[in-house]
Length: 366
Image (cartoon, rainbow, N blue to C red; front, side, top):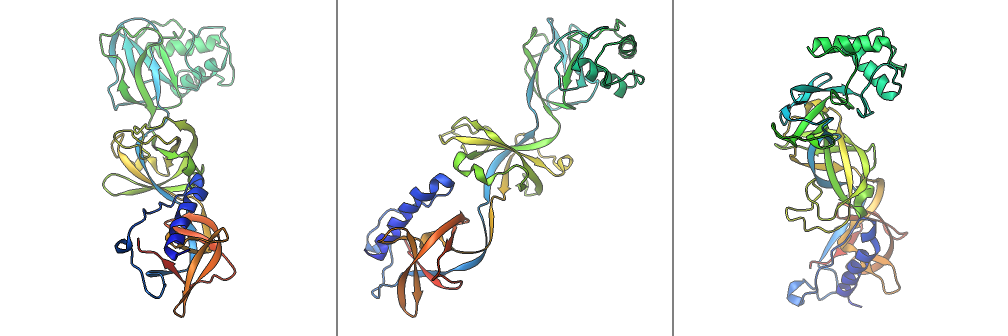
């Protein structure tokens, strides 16, 4: 078998052997003699050294800058929308999110949604989180935030809160008075316009947390390059960089969806299954680029230290099976069988008793 054939077969075999693990070598189409240099002495047209060093499977992936914990905020009761916080605005505890019939819906912090009116005698986690908010706002300093009962003292604190906002001092909190969320919220989108009648359960606002994150998508075969907690580097618009870490990996994204980055392309033509990945910043307060800005994320991936590696293009298929490289020494070329390890940066880790650092291996010029 000629050297050229062995290189071509080797490249094709590597595609089948390793593309499922997240790496692929693209086999070049066969060309005539004028498309590839050939030497009369049978030596390869080019060589490259066997190198020893660190090899990383890290990737550069396109992503989208955004905000954490996006969700729809639904109306708590019927009526006409008379006011809503504008897109891009931030709302903190006790701030107004929107008004229905002139009645404000205010933000409180908590994990349990406002699913019922709260009044004296009620018990539950939602009562506890209401108490915590009243204490934080200074209206119920004597309340026990671990007591799940809506007590007379809770009603008194609610009346103080209502008085401060010049509303009826009923001592009860209606379902349409409060919306609970995990923390400060940023309005991403107004889902209803002033004058609309959204009705219970219909979205009024799309909100997010205020912490900046990056969302990206990875082909499932490359998902191993993103591990929760691994450090990343994010290149921001304008060329600045910021450090962060992988926050979550999981959830298969729809094929061809290019809305959240990851290389889907403007036309959404990439039909490969993808995995959703989110990245948080070490110093999120310093990130001031616009929402939905495109960014580039450098994933660390796996790093193998002090390994021998050769360019992927040096691999060839051996007649007896397996892979090898063509070592060039003293004007001669000989095949050396190797075992393949990790791929990264256009190189592949190789091991074999006859292979040493500094040896020259053949490279075809296709």
